[in-house]
Length: 234
Ligand code: ADE
Image 1 (spheres, rainbow, N blue to C red):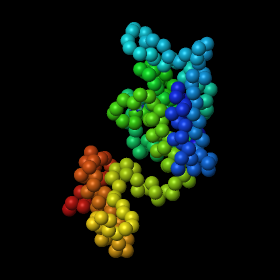
Image 2 (tube, protein in one colour):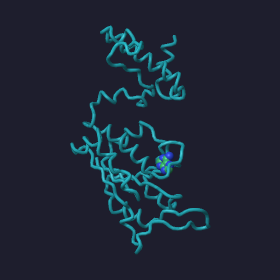
Image 3 (cartoon, rainbow, N blue to C red):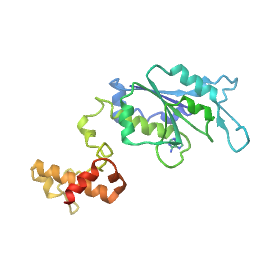
Image 4 (tube, protein in one colour):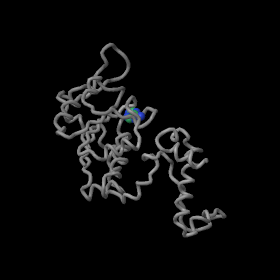
């Protein structure tokens, strides 16, 4: 997969994609991430990319020309263009899965007080990473790239994400433990040392349901989880 990130602050991405799993995915040519300063596309003699809003008001607004030219020159037949904005569709794991199947993503990071409304016409999808306001789309872009890249086939062992919270089951993950069996008086649940894998699987599923009910009861409204829980309660 190819991911082009359009930003005015390329330095914000300096190290983030050069560590750990994302770096390995890049080294193994499973993902190609390009950070593009869209100021370079500005036709203004001073490389200006923003201007005052029509009708008045505070702050500067990103202009159409640099972003339109950047997107139009990078876009190919199978490109999906994403605009990051707090008014977008709230990002969820299901969307990360869908996006991980794409060939080419262009991610536009907004900044300053906003962008010219006509920039929206470039986007196939507008995404918000949550109901809060960031100073710009750069951190949101990192969230997208990280969550999408780990789902690209071959990047991590599929078993590692098959049980992720927020897949179709909408159950939070079960608790995991490692050595030692007792740390500072805190013990690992007996069942996990029993060697009975059927019982361990049942315990884990049960824990997922309990934890989800306790911490994120809202998730239980979705999908088959109600069914699972109802069965457990009978
Ligand atoms: N830009 C500013 N806030 C944002 C958010 N919550 N998600 C995506 N892009 C943003």
